[in-house]
Image 1 (cartoon, rainbow, N blue to C red):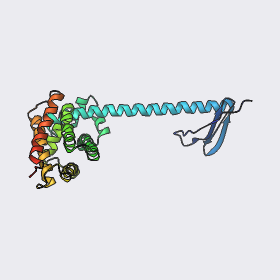
Image 2: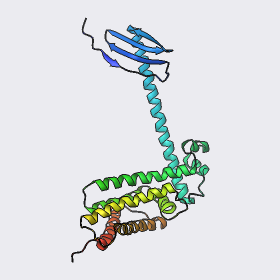
Image 3: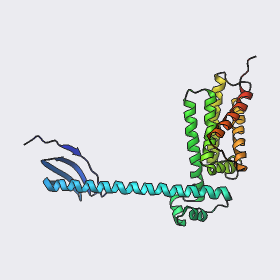
Image 4: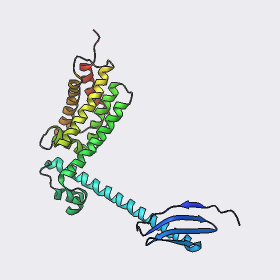
Length: 269
């Protein structure tokens, strides 16, 4: 008889009364030991092989169904996000209704609350999309060894890229958070302060390396830089101006950078 080429398998069924403890399979032998009602039982030979195949199929089916549910959830959430962005842009946060968002998303009113407990939760989920992208960028900017100009350009590009791709999201950040205190909860304020602190670290690095003048505090230069960027983007949002292509986006970034750096750069005396 040829030597057996056994391989160990493990399987855990959703039903806790049936758990495979030890499965082996080879062309000549198959054995499955499992728990049934708290007692160890064994299946071997063809029966054991069939048992393993059946469990494998069931496992694949369970994973497939879970994957489909996750995909469906993401599709529904995106539809709700897109509808909420448009509704809040048109009516403002307080006048936008969950029923309008549900209708625009093409789903039932009750299903919206299956994903988000309240309009506040939905609003925070929208803002988190902004913050996650921004803080991810700032983390990369602080850690890389690029020149200061490139680091600041990266921050500017994030605002402009997001405005180009998701103008409603930037609109909400500008009108509902940056330029309004009505919706500024303590948690949202902490996010905003963290954004300022992260940017200030980049500015401070520029001063430490002798690129920026040091007769102004890093915080002042941070406020000037972000003030110029936020005001520029706010004007575009409120005037419903759009970025027409990457060439225009690049010119905008260069303009903001040049105005800031020429006023803040260190001069030789």
